Image (cartoon, rainbow, N blue to C red; front, side):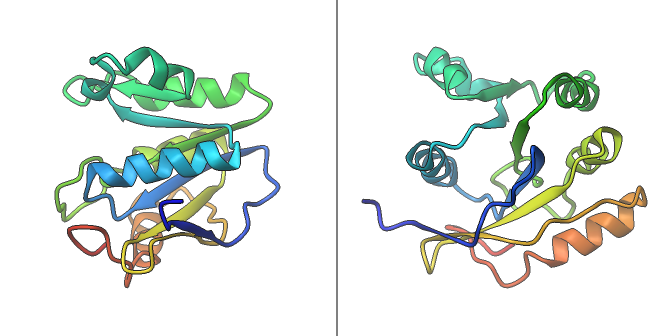
Length: 166
């Protein structure tokens, strides 16, 4: 109904880290959450704690959002690795930029989680001009953080967020 669409097919994988970028607006989360609900996907999504502090917090938790305190990210990687190990099926959504502001360097937590939990990464390209979420191909990490980060980030070149490019 909003005009947003999904391009591509979700893989048949019991465990995934889904990274979405560019993340430049609160609307990215709104459209993404609506897409998740419309498709009936069971995706847990890491989100800054402040969003969960308001009256929507209990509802957002039931929808699978996981609050993260970015000022004190104590052991977040290990918490997520433990969740992956404890679950037969788990898809985890993360914005690798870690913020809506333009950043020169992405956060590497998603790579560390993927490597330590031995879970593949599915890139999802947010493209406002086409009002699309575009599913990329499964990416596997090698453990060489800088190389993996450069390779995966390059996939997002050419996609345009609401307020900036990837």
